[in-house]
Length: 73
Image 1 (cartoon, rainbow, N blue to C red):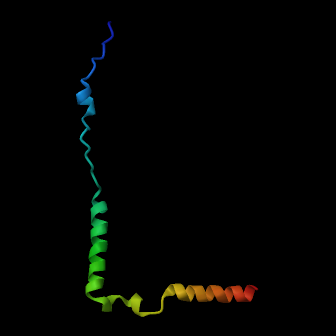
Image 2: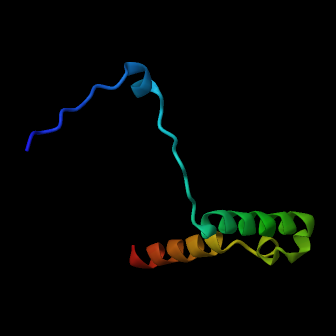
């Protein structure tokens, strides 16, 4: 059985980029949209942002860390 020979393609055809199709899962669109909507609602009604009115948890954590270092030293 004879082997098939490969035919050369026109160089102009090879220069054309292939069409790329991108398919995203549903959550790749839904999650950023939900996060954007939640942040937009917080901007519109900042009274609902309870974390902004209390003392930041990071400063409390740093204060406890400093106290721990004082005890260890």
